[in-house]
Image 1 (cartoon, helix red, strand yellow):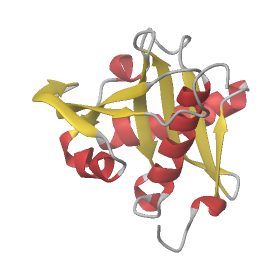
Image 2 (cartoon, rainbow, N blue to C red):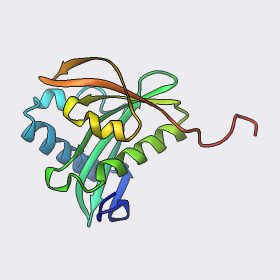
Image 3 (cartoon, rainbow, N blue to C red):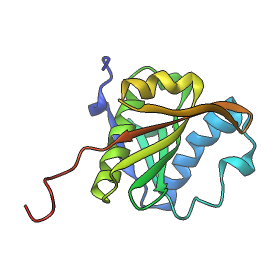
Length: 158
C-alpha cells in the first residue's frame, strides 16, 4: 500500500440513513456523473437486500460498495467505488478487505463480482480470477471475477 494506508480510512457497514446517503453520494459521483450510468440502473431493486459499505477519510465519504447474496455459498460484490481524487491510495483494497470479511463472517465461501474491464487488474491483485467472457453492462465492458474466501476458523465443531 502507499502512504495513505487503511488506517487513514474508516470503512463501515452502513447502519444509518446518513451513512447510506453518503454511500449513494459516492456511487452517484463515480457511476452516474463520471461514467454516465443511468440513475435507474445505479439504484436498483437490490438496494434493500444488500449490505452497504461506506468509507470515510477525515469524516468525508470517499468510497462505497455493497454486498448481497448470489446463492447459498456465494456473495456478490457490487457498486465498488472510490472518488476519483482518492484513487491509487489503497482505499479500494481496504474497502474490499472489509467487504470480504463481512461475507466470510456471514458464512459465504466465495465472492463474485462484475468488474469493469479497466478495473480487472485491480481485482487480479486481490486474487480474483476471471470467469467467462467479457460482456457489457450499463454500456460499459465488464468481466465476471470470483474469489474463494478464507475461512474464519476451522471446520464446524472445532
